[in-house]
Length: 121
Image 1 (tube, rainbow, N blue to C red):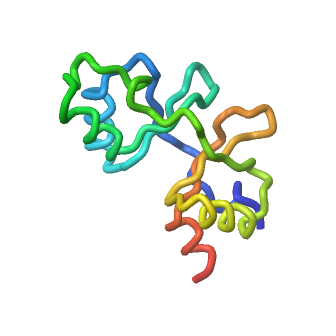
Image 2 (tube, rainbow, N blue to C red):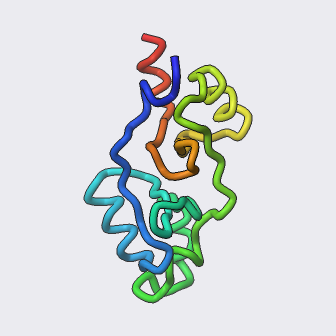
């Protein structure tokens, strides 16, 4: 089975120049804990609720940009990756969510531990 068969294809995004306040609002409204940061259709980073919380303690969330708080070293897999391979990568990197790209390296979706758990029911 390939990742594209279990991933969530509709992913909420945020731009690098958005503020942390905008990101936090999106996360709260959608009840999500992570946002891929995209410049156009290219993933340039990941922003988690933890990143937002840590940065907003000492910085103004209405002024601090997502690009200043995001993780730019994005771990990803391709949509045609086998589920077992993606699960192994998530385990090795201690990830709860993994960005899924198409072969043109554009965002295709996201796969979570919950998606993997549903696979093994």
